[in-house]
Length: 534
Ligand SMILES: Nc1ncnc2c1ncn2[C@@H]1O[C@H](COP(=O)(O)OP(=O)(O)OP(=O)(O)O)[C@@H](O)[C@H]1O
Image (cartoon, rainbow, N blue to C red; front, top):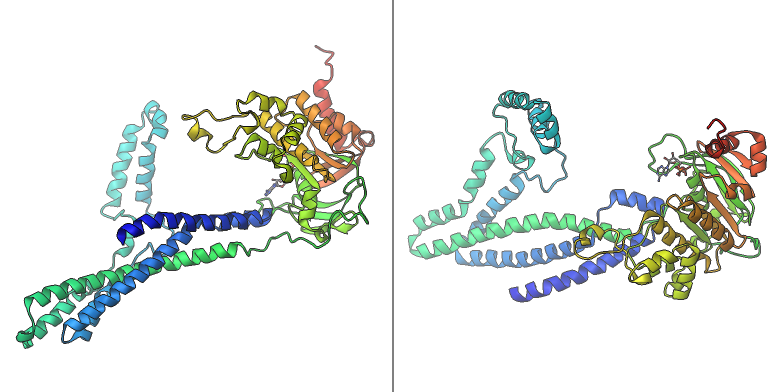
């Protein structure tokens, strides 16, 4: 039986763990950004916990059977079977209920003893981190002297770990009682043997003593396993609840596109007095404050502004990655909240510098821009060419089949040379994913949020050029810090400052206005102006 359980347990364990891993994977994949961010802070639930709960349950079952057979045996073997059995149970009850165990509780521990804290600080000072300091500053003798003083001040105060410190009691009563109770059953047996020596043998004493101790141990094991099982089961409950977590961004039931009121030129937006602060954000200021603007369908829009002025936040709201706190966003005449979220995602393409390479092949990294055609190599190569990643692919020994393992890379480096891409090469692959998305033919709104920070100037120019071409005249927004062709060709420039859209218009209009935009533009232009004093 032991062999069988040892043989079967790992296989069963894998099945249970993978079943719940898949369950967690599915549950997490359906969560939107704000819900997912909350969950990451709160939940530590893992598939392994389900397996642990199963193990505890089977152990409790097995030990309960063991306990019943032990009780039955003791009960039958003695004259005062019931009393003997009850006395055998006193000790385990005292050990489990009367003792103080920290590991069954949630706890925080700290020390407020200044001498102890001083000792820890001085020990730290003698570590390698500070070696250069204490050697060059010759502060070793001072550290030793201070350590001695702090040690004397601490005296005999215990510095033991909280686990053992918590178990100490002020009086010995409980300890004496617990020890004595272990001998209660045998004292009872001895008293009976004195009164009626004919019915009691030394052999029966030995057998009963052994069984009484075994019973004691089984009771304690059940108690502690039960405490662990309760925790495990609450974790399993949490695991099941994962699938029922409500997303913070609920979808509507309006299909999109619904050509009754959509323009052929793509999505049109209107922001009405929109304000937004990131959930759990540290800043007391809103990321977006009372922004009202219109983005007509088919317009090429450029958003400019200083770092932290809210450019990316506007993009996230237009993509409905977050919902506004107040105000409203209208898409093609209807509130954005009325549309089905999956429909909106299908017609939007978002390219930012936050997008990551996946730990998959280069082909999948690009192909997943259009999941229905993730195996279509011709389409992938076409997208790679548009994204400027064709050269990157050619340089890899395995071409599009090169597997990227960003997280495993450092571990595997010593074993096998894994593909490593430069920052600019990564951006080209990620950009190609967006071009793959364009090839779906569904895109009605595309955004490029500073996707070119690691690209060389030629690469950046080509990227913007091709994005505009691939966008096919549909609504497009570029977020950029660099003024150039884009801003000059933009139908609309939105200039952000501290969460507000302070200026809007074309390049010409904003330059003529002489406000924030022209100031930002002139700062950049001056860097390239011919300095006649040189
Ligand atoms: N995920 C987040 N959680 C909390 N606060 C955020 C988050 N993202 C941005 N913020 C804050 O919101 C404000 C606007 O940020 P946003 O990213 O929109 O600025 P930006 O204009 O795009 O900046 P940059 O030019 O540096 O990319 C900033 O104060 C920023 O710190």
